[in-house]
Length: 125
Image 1 (cartoon, helix red, strand yellow):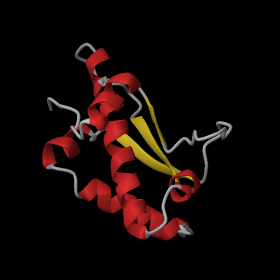
Image 2 (cartoon, helix red, strand yellow):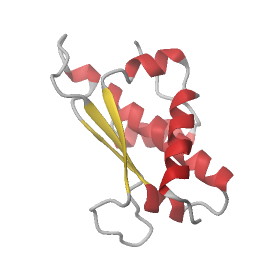
Image 3 (spheres, one colour):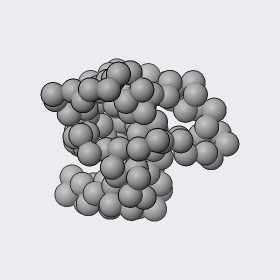
């Protein structure tokens, strides 16, 4: 699907705005950014839709880092999976939940198990 950078930014902002309050509070010190494409090589069926960079909340031992953690959305990779704008909205939402899961300390394997069951990560604000 072809989506302009401006429209993609609007869709990401809407996904963030639609998060329940307790999840928004968890993201208070997290920068959300958009990049055109991941620097990781694309191979087979593997695309990088998003990336969490930082110290998971579970590993912080009572202190907040000086610099914010970061969630990155990759516009081109996400758009490749979508045929319609509704598909893209759903991919953005799923990617957001996945990266929030990393932020609170879930591994990829744990998140995949939760995603198969359509369960959102449990977050203690």
